[in-house]
Length: 322
Figure 1 (cartoon, rainbow, N blue to C red):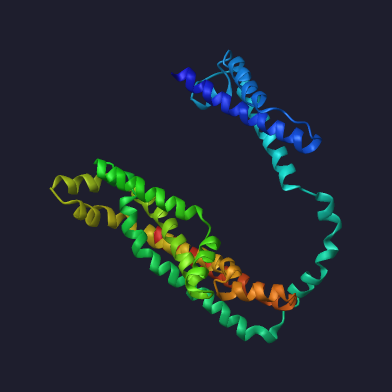
Figure 2: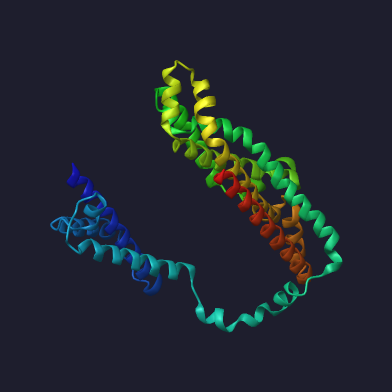
């Protein structure tokens, strides 16, 4: 069974290599390789590689070997991945070095901001800060409660606990994988363009993100107090309140402040699709090619992010230290 598992991994590795090479041949030289060749050729290579117990799949499976074959395979995979990335991204170093003059009007506006628009932009910036604050505050109670059900060490004691763990983890992972800007588009259609839509987008994303952070902190707690309180006949709720909660409150506060910091920055992005705040103002000024106003907004955003970063970093260090 172990050899079959290693063969399967080795086949998957070489299938990736052959598929990448066939794509490069098609993209660069228009040479087409048929699907049967792409599927069968890696199987032949994998079978040959199985003759040497030092292949990469065996190394991944934990088999100790002095062979350098796995290093060769790893080098091939990394090299082909970098080449694929270079071709797909269409990296053009020459354009980067020779066409900087195209950005002259933008850069001149950024480094010569328009102070006449300071008041309306500050109002939009305040909207962004409080939008992010509300999204974070509203997310805390949902994430706090659900994080207990998403912690493996608390929920794996029964079949219902396992099902609850799997359901909450799956839903939160899906919601977290959908970027806040997509949620903003959905809520702009739902409740209309404005800061409320942006707040809802960050709220949904924050709940999913905080569930992950909170639950992982619960999974890393000291199990001693939990076992001691269980031994007294305490209920599940009492165990959570008196054994789990005291160990997680300080990290929870640190994670929450960090999330607020993230939300302030993400609020700028959701504004681009109608989520309100400074992001919406930035999009409008950029559309009008008002680069001096864009420069003012960028400097204001940079200042707020810097202040928030210093403040949140200080608070997190104080909480964790104490």
